[in-house]
Length: 405
Ligand code: TGC
Ligand code: FAD
Image (cartoon, rainbow, N blue to C red; front, side):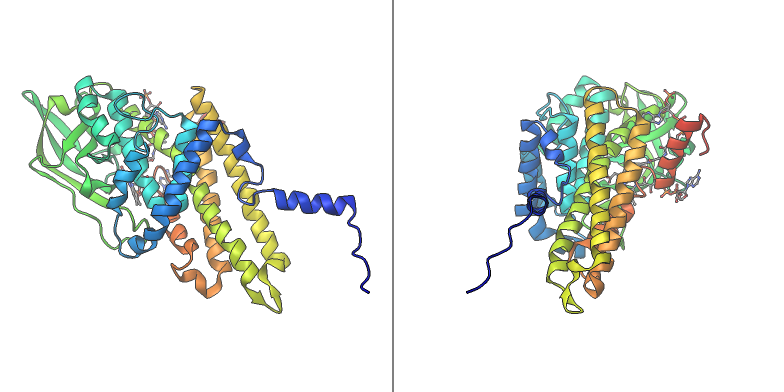
């Protein structure tokens, strides 16, 4: 007869229970702090990513191809311009927009980029600074995914310093003549309309340049090793004649484009949480199955310490993003807070993805596993929308009162 099983101490039982009842991807149960609508938005996008993005994204990445066929479904789910009220947009809150970004980036940063640019960098300035005619013409079509937009701020001689912009426009009767170039522009080649920022005698203005305007070219940038499932382009303007009706009337300073960046950076504070969760989920499985030195990798101290470190950093990022979203929904968001969160959360995800790649050993260099794709994507995410150094300097300026750019 076998001896009876030892009775578990209350402590042991409680520990087991607490371990088994926590979600490893959400150790602080941030989800319990979401409203019913926010949970519904997250679940809907998560289902879309599981069912429609994950099956195609690896091939799209390898083929350096933007999976444009996903756009109609993205639009049907209300993910384009989701924070805008009216104009066929969903009118969701900022936290919901963040969750959309998080779930999409769990699939791939390229897809989140597409939605960030369309929503925060093109629809937002048209909604905020555009005429009623411009809003009616573009916003419903963009919400339905029938028109695609891009945002041209960065120039070849230095993106961190957009105040040193060379692209310029001069009045000619009722029109403007636009000359110059932009570099590293997401969606450029497939865009129906480009929001182009240019210097004028009346300050920095936003121009809605349409794809067929003579003198406008948007060739795709080839050979990218990052964001391969996203289109990145150069924009060239050679005496492009832009009618006055295509100029955004509501802003004439650098505040215009920089205010758009705050919207997009806000979404990027959430997105990389999804990338890091995808890496953690994959490595939790992998380290249990991988037997080395006679036991699963997950049962070694160094591996557990690394996984625990990722969980700590993901949790911190989740709480930061949620508080940022609540501040935004309360109308109290300060751009410096966005800089701190973009810096922290992208750095977190890039470190997790690089470490996950290492923990997979040789398999880590294969796109069969998600970390290397996320890692390569995050090299762009840490650079665009303000490099990590620029965000550190924004926080430094807030603390000291001195701009050290
Ligand atoms: P500065 O003198 O500080 O400001 C000029 C005016 O802008 C206002 N402002 C902001 N407003 C809203 N949000 C912000 N984040 C703002 N930052 C500044 C400011 O109050 C002022 O307004 P006003 O009314 O007094 O005129 O300007 P600066 O030239 O010294 O700029 C400082 C600095 C370095 C922070 C800025 O140039 C910067 O952010 N540089 C980084 C550029 C950048 O992030 N580019 C991103 C391009 S778009 C992109 O990467 C898209 S990737 C998308 C994707 O695929 O997902
Ligand atoms: P630079 O500004 O030349 O910076 C080079 C290095 O110098 C960086 O390490 C930077 O941190 C550092 N540096 C700069 N200033 C300082 C300083 N004062 N002190 C210390 N270090 C400093 N732009 C758009 O307008 N629209 C888009 O849709 C868009 N999409 C993009 C998509 C991708 C895939 C990529 C990679 C970029 C995209 N960008 C876009 C451009 C992006 O915003 C810029 O690459 C970014 O702002 C940095 O500019 P830069 O590449 O010219 O680097």
